[in-house]
Each structure stands twice: as structure tokens, then as C-alpha cells.
Image 1 (tube, helix red, strand yellow):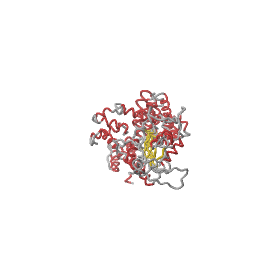
Image 2 (spheres, rainbow, N blue to C red):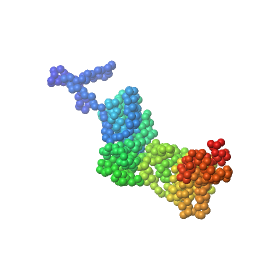
Image 3 (cartoon, rainbow, N blue to C red):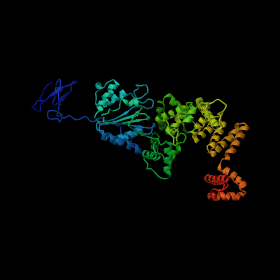
Image 4 (cartoon, rainbow, N blue to C red):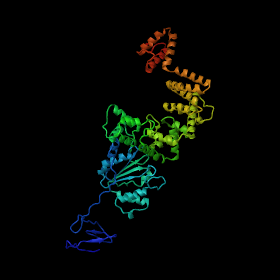
Length: 579
């Protein structure tokens, strides 16, 4: 230690040479051991420069300028940030999850910009590349293609100002040093695009850090105190985003309908809405809509189409084999909405295992819950799922198994025995189990099998359609049974034996008798015979009982009322209001 003199002042001041040649000005203590507290006055004086506090690290990226909606989601995050600060020293992890392209990163950056002032000790943003297109920068440590936790930790510690020679090469030691630095500090940490819980486990602050950690991911199964689900934008929000990006005023009237149609063609997904909105600066909305065909709406937007394809592929490539196969079966299913019974029939896995796999795909946001039950694809992902699954022999085999299972289940449930041919119906122990399975089938999903089986030229196509018609008739949906049989009849006349055509005609006549419009004249005739009254008198009394005339063009509701009155009259021998 040396005691040089300041040339501007006769008093000596203390300096000390440190490793690396640097010097520290001000009071110094050099001792082997110190007992008690040491207090230094670092305010500076003429004998040395004042010590300026280092600025808090801040690596947050600016949020998008064209942000709309998400009021509920932002409120959840802001409330959590305020709770973290109010509790003092107790942090929280918030998972923001949703499908690729839905706007998770934009949301957490917008939220971070709003709450950053609550976290003065540091604000960090890290892209973990958990679901990234091929070729994106990343560090591969675990063979999964995601960014390695050790590399992330080293970068975070460097951003705090820590020199490389103090950063451990061991993952546990590096994580401990990171937690130690965070302890007692109020820090905002954004972990964007996380792959799974294992990837972020070592990045989490410790219990004494007053930190808010925002994690965005396409997976729901990451441990977090608060979960924020990010769905596609609402219709109103999607139109607002189109107008914001397109520099338009949100219109009313016919032009509003055009923009609503554009939003639907984009699946209300920000990834597609932004480039389409940008085109609205150069083209009228009507012309843009005309260019966006319903079957392939992004064909004239190659960059947007590539971005959607990359978003799908980045999620698909992370799926384990069992979920990939389940996704193929969902893509091969004839209907846009599907449930565990029919996916289980296609895959041979059964309803229980199929239901579990469908739920896991929903957790990864590869499938969406459908209104009314079941699952579906996002509109823009369906095309890519079908293209990935392909249309080869495996598709035909899976659909053939589906047709056979449904055919034999209905036959066993409603007629007491399965088809004599071998098939998947052996998975049902008897008619009661088959009946229970059939009761879980959704009417529209079931109806979609008929044109699909005919198009596939499936061996069971005609017989399957008849079985489904019987199912509808037995479950009090005779009008659907009539639709099925009338659709089937010309195909049977073209391809089937005359006996099959005769069976279908018999079924059609029987089912039509179940319809109110067909049943009412039969009951009126029976009443004429039973009462001795004329047709006119019987009809007049029924009309008086329901207060409406039953004309040929009467609604189904009116006919149902008249049918109920006629049935009661026959059973009781008197009209209901005469009893």
C-alpha cells in the first residue's frame, strides 16, 4: 500500500493497487481479520472521485406498437406484480401459455413495460428457443434442441456485471450464484418461449427474491403460481388489430362485415392478422378478401403462410411418437370436431388412452377444446396437420377401423349382436357396453362418417349408413335418419344389389312414419275410425285444442303439438282439455 500526495492538496490520500492494475481512491482497510462493522463514507471529496452506483441491468425489448385487446390477461399480470411488491421479498412465477402465433411474447413485453417501474433492481428478457423454427440460434445440451440452462445462466450473470472468471462451469453452482445475486432484490425476469419445466427450473429465483418471473410457453404443464391462458383474439379484437396495422378507422356497416370476414380467414391469429393488416394500407379490404380463398386463405401471403407453417412445425417436432400418431388420427378424422371414442377406434387405443392423449395435445396447444365438447384444430393448423399426416394406406386403414367399430357397436347395441365378420367390435363385452359407448357419440361427428365412407369406397359404407340411420331413429332424431337414407339411396342404386336398395327403401318408409309430418295423418285416420267423426271434425277439434290450424306448411313445433294432442286423444278416448 502506498500513500501518495494529491498535487492539488497537501494532505495525503490513500490508494491501493489491485490485481489488474486498477486503483481505488478513498479510505482503505487492510487487515487479516475484522470484528464488528466497517462504515465508509463514499460521498467523495476533493481527495478522490465520487462513487456512482452502477445502473440496474435492463435487457427488455420494446413491446409492439400495434397491441390491442388482452385486457383480462394484462390485468392478471399487473395485479400479480403489485402483489409481489406488496408482499416484499416473496416472488411469483406466472405462466403465459397459448398456441404458436397467438401473441404470447407481445403480451408479456407489453405487461413488462407497464410494471417495470416496480422492479428497480433489474429487468431481464431471455429467449429460450423452446419452440423455434429450424435454423434459429440455440444451444443444444439435452438433445431436445432447446437452449441450455447453463448457457442462459451465464448470460444472465454477465448482464449483472459479473466477470467471466467468476461464473462457474457447473450448472448447480451457476444456478446458486444466480439465486444469490437475486436475493433481496426486486427484479423482473421474462423467460420467453420456454420448452418445459426442466428448462427453467435452474433459472427460477429463490424464496428471498422479490422477483416476478413471466414465462411464455406453448405448454400448460409448467409449474407456476398463476396461469394466463392466451386464446386467439376475439372477433372484435381481431378487426381492431387489422385496422391498427392497416392504419384504418374501425368501420361500421358493410365494410365492417368485410373486415370481420378477413379476421375469420386469418383464424383471428395475430401471426396472420398483422401481414394481412399491412396489406390493407395498399389495397381495399374487399379486394384482399377476394384474394383470400376459404380453402387456402394465406396462399397470396407467402411470408405469413411460411410463418404459420413454421409455428405448426416447431410444435409438431417436439411431440413424442404417441402424440404424433394421435395427431395423425385427428387429421384423418372426417369431422372437424372429434372425441375420444372415435379417435380411440381409429387408433385401436380405446377411449381411455385416446382421451389422455387428446388432453396432452391440448396441453401443448396442438388441439383446442371445441364448443359443446370434444376437440378441434385451429383453422390455420388443420391444413398443416393433414399434410403432415399424409393420405396413404395408414389413413385408409385407420378410417376402415373407425367404420367397422361404429358399425358393429350400433349393431350390437340396438340389435343385440355384432356383425358376423371379425372386427374391433370384440372390444365390447356385450350390448350394454356397446350401448354406453354409442351414447357418447356426437350426432354431427357420427354423420360425417357416411360421406367419408362412401368417398373412401369402404366395404361397409352402405351398411354403416343404414346402422347410423337406425341409431338416429332410435335416439329420437328421425329427421337425421331420413337425411342419411335419402343421401344413401342413389349410391345404393348405382352400386348395390336390388335387395339392398329394397332394404333402404323399407327403412326410409319406416323412419318417415316417425316424423310428425308423416305420423299426424295416420293418427287422424285412426281417430276417425275410433270416434266415428269425419276427417274435418277430427282436424277441427285438434286445431281448437292447440289454438293453431295445422296446415301443410305448419312448423315442426306446431305439428309436434298436434301430434301430442292426437296421441293423448287416442290413449284416453278424449281430448286433453275435455278430460
